[in-house]
Image 1 (cartoon, rainbow, N blue to C red):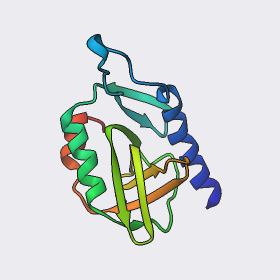
Image 2 (image 1 turned 180 degrees about the horizontal axis):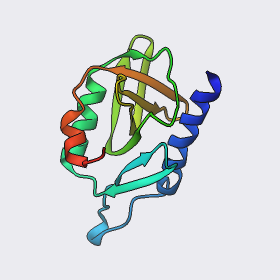
Image 3 (image 1 turned 60 degrees about the vertical axis):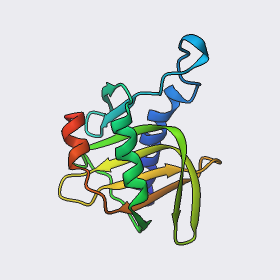
Image 4 (image 1 turned 45 degrees about the horizontal axis):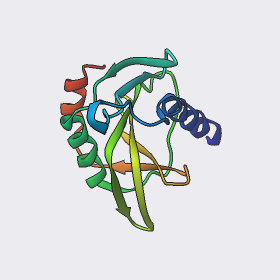
Length: 146
């Protein structure tokens, strides 16, 4: 079980590495937000990258606001589907029992026929897998994967 969790964390971290540098500079000193990415677990690669928008920010913030607690477990397999990465344009606070974390990225683990889970990292890159109750269907429809 620990090996499966480590595999998922490694996948999420791999998605994070290419974008750990600062966002792309834009005219007048402003920056563009990092893109939203969809990682296909079975294919082992990012299969879609879309511009980050207020709509994606709102989805991620609603998920974080609906966190119900830490997840007791997660299983990784080829049927798991997708991991979505939504970089936040502003740091968000996640508070739940025994946890108060500031986050800059949200990873959504979507496995058909299983509850979706969120993966976040604290400022020291410590991972937290979270259960939440928000509806992800509007997000899935917008990103059009699966």
